[in-house]
Length: 391
Image 1: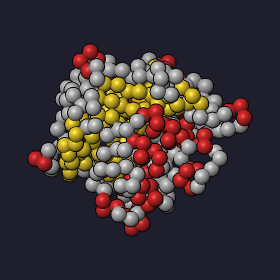
Image 2: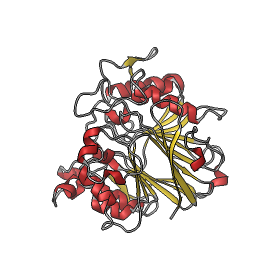
Image 3: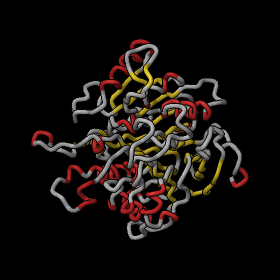
């Protein structure tokens, strides 16, 4: 509400759905409080060493006195301050790049127990326990050959052995892998539908899936293209999250490598949504025309981490009325001076700095977007947008 500006974000209440796009300047991290109080974290970034080399010139937010993983954990603890149990029930890792799971550098702290570095997701349980981690390929990690995975494996093994962590592979097509844990009967209109992972996409029938790439004949997807995507539904409200999915060949020019254009396949499985976390931080190779025209979002959140987020071509697609009709509001967590100077029409964005929180009202018929000051830990509201009517 307008009266909330300058004050801390009002606390979540039973029946609401909160989606916190946390800006650390280091990559993706989105925290959900589901309608019954079940909690979910999607990605926990710590992308590069500090200070960042050009062109990745974003500072750590709110400052560089802590690693990004600790800042994320502290944000979550503030969001859960009135909860009797401070816990992350589910953590979903969209794919295995450092700006989504944590990159090990010479500056990374080491765990006091366990032989692994604390970075991104591996730092979170130092402050907030995690019940289950879901990733795209547990336990084999055999396609494609992931990078930066040794530390993650060591972290998982120690957490499983010593803290009872449960790890599962994401199951495309299923709508029961992430379920409400506290009062599911009260929210029968809530669902998280798994859409795609490792290039295996839901067909829209039961839990059936199909492969986008013909592995037997040498077709391969890269790490970004193997990202997890899901659609969250609460009443009339729908939200899409797709990690770093892209559509390189469609963005550059028509190509025979159609299996690599994973965005349209995920969007067809999803159908239209109210809100979208932009794929791949709004980079040049993602959020292609077909993807956006299929999803037709009213609200787009760009979780940026570098110069060129969002890219000029991508932002023009996002604001283009030729792709889908009607209004749309765009919120960007962080924009560098060079991106301000080179991305045309950026003044059309509703927010270009701060945490972005989508708060869905009880029942899922309406929602608002809050922009929060990211310069300290007060979570002061700097903008309120809506209410929006869910589709």
